[in-house]
Length: 128
Image 1 (cartoon, rainbow, N blue to C red):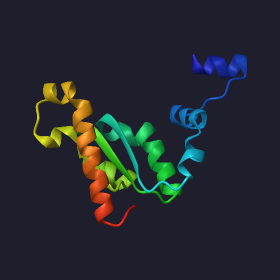
Image 2 (cartoon, rainbow, N blue to C red):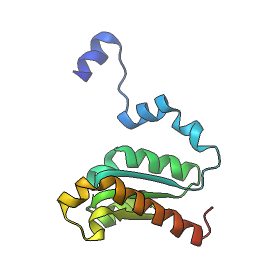
Image 3 (cartoon, helix red, strand yellow):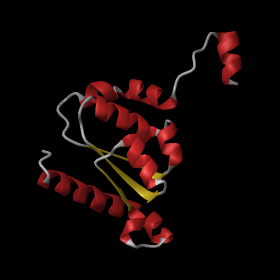
Image 4 (cartoon, rainbow, N blue to C red):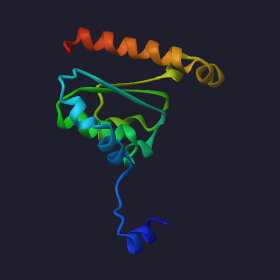
């Protein structure tokens, strides 16, 4: 369908994350002295480095010298993620030793707890 739109409607192909970043004004937003970006997905894996939200956030964080951390439900391909995206850290709900069912039912609580710990950690290593 995309190729047809390009051929017949003069449409242009654009990365989904680039479109979202453009529409939300993300680039302008993070230029306002952010000290840390926390981003996440349900599952962080090899697809993450192929253009999902975390990849786009990672690129912009590095361009602006802002450290970023990843919060997720589960992390797979950890070394690949670290090598390609270079986050300050990666934390997953499953690292808390809970069941998948519990993680899904209480995701907001766990994400809040993990995010708080990331902020605390970054303050102790000198990030405002």
